Amino acid sequence: MDFPFHLTGILYFPKIRSNLDLQKNRIQLYCNQVFVTDSVEDIVPDFLTLLHGVIDSPDIPLNVSRSYLQSDSNVKKISGYITKKVADRLTAIFKNDRKEFESKWDDVKLFINYGMLTEEDFYSKMENVALFKDTEGSYFTFDEYKKLIENSQTDKNKNLIYLYSTNKEEQHGFIEIALNKGYSVLLMDNSLDVALIGMLEQKFGQNSRFLRVDSDSIDNLIKKDESKGVDLPDGQLRMLKQLFSSQMPKIEKADFHVDAQSLGEDALPVLITTGEYMRRMKDMAAIQSGMSFYGDMPDMFTVILNKDHKLIQRILDDAGDACDAKVKPEDEKLEALKQRQSELRKAREGKKDDEVPQAEKDEMSEIEAGISETESAVSSIYSEYAATNKVIHELIDLALLQNGMLKGESLSTFIRRSIELI
Image (cartoon, rainbow, N blue to C red; front, top):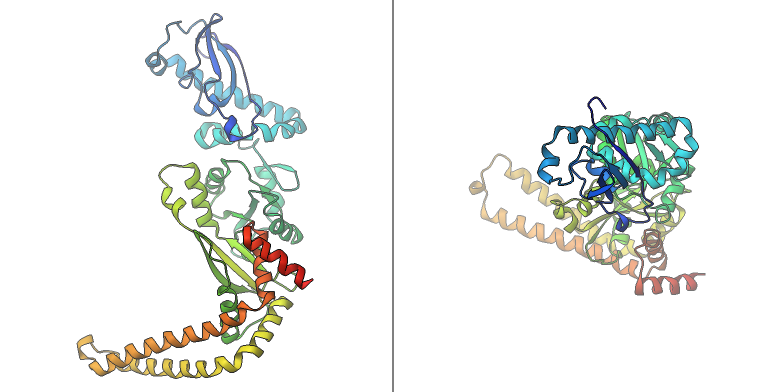
């Protein structure tokens, strides 16, 4: 140090098996081998209080007080010195024995990530040493990984997309889709990774984005050229969405939105995804106070129907044969109502509300009620058909099963139906 201060000690990273193992105040402070305290948060940076070990210094009085530690200038310098020594030691191991460093990374990354999140100086010391780990078990520095993915995972808007997974087993299907596209997926399964991701997006710049691999279809996560797939007429698109939306299960604190996309003939017929923004906010709410609002909100899921898949096309054909005759008169009525609605709106242009005749207002109200009633009638036709269609229910349950959302009676029903279909 640049001042006369005697300090010896040993600090080490404890083996962490779960977040329950995280305990502070496992560093003991001694004065000439006489125990002083294990409350060292004013000597050791907060993120290093998770380490275990001992520090001995003859220059710290035996009757040390909290106020002394907070006010003494030497103690403050010790904190910075310890941070530097830890960073220097980690850097030395990385440079001298990269394989050894990688083998220890999973055990020490929680401490390092915590330090980078809470200490700007520590981040600057570790940014060239900290590692990413992908789902294949390979390790990369931040710069190495950027070079690896910048050609394949830069979208049409010049955004570099970092795909990641928080659970390799639960998200296996989505990971496999990404890998088959030639993409790389990071494994971010640490309790602090959601916060780390937010920080890295800021550090890496506005053209870098982290997206969980199951937050959308892979072609939407990394948008290249506009994809060309099956282009459904409005009527068929409406029918397809209503067939599936009417049969989605009622799950507490879960909302499903049905969408149809062209994912390719070889992709799955149905996917269920969770949007990146809302899921990340809910993840942050779980670890950060003051964000309970997001934690109390329902989970928002998007059910993506693959218009290119033969099973979806077969459902459309079968549903059309069964429902078209019933839907046609309702559609004709709906078209007439909307035509009259358009005429009334055009007649109102440039008029104040009190200038519109009451008869027209009453007619508009009747038309709006008629449109709502007719649309409900069409929805009921599709819902009644879908309720008896085993393929629709099978596809929905398969998508739910992939996301770990099929349980209890619903799972038993799925198993029985699958046996019947076999």
